[in-house]
Image 1: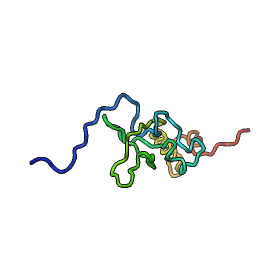
Image 2 (image 1 turned 180 degrees about the vertical axis):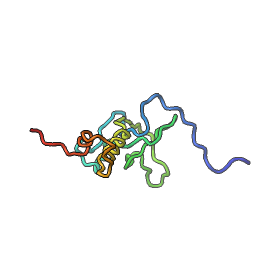
Image 3 (image 1 turned 60 degrees about the vertical axis):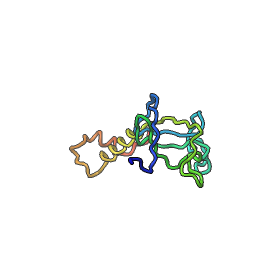
Image 4 (image 1 turned 30 degrees about the vertical axis):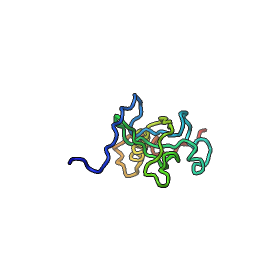
Length: 139
């Protein structure tokens, strides 16, 4: 026979229209109302992580799923002892922040352009001084 012992994954419906993209910073929280991450609400992240929103980054977007990387799973998504999978009966809210990609590209460009080993002919002196020099105090 052709039937193996493995289980087939259920067919998932396509996600509705959304603007989530790879590299977007997102917040994930239980319930239907978006919340700020604990560190933005002046709460201790370690003690409030189960209650507050958790920040993550969209690592992959498919027609049926968003894959999100987080430092810590919300308590409701962590598998309980004796269970292989977490309970997912609770609704979760996913809110989009800024994309991390432009920030990372800008940081890399500033680091490359402020490298003292950069050939002087690569960048005009005025622009190099704006990028590499510390700001002067206002008079």
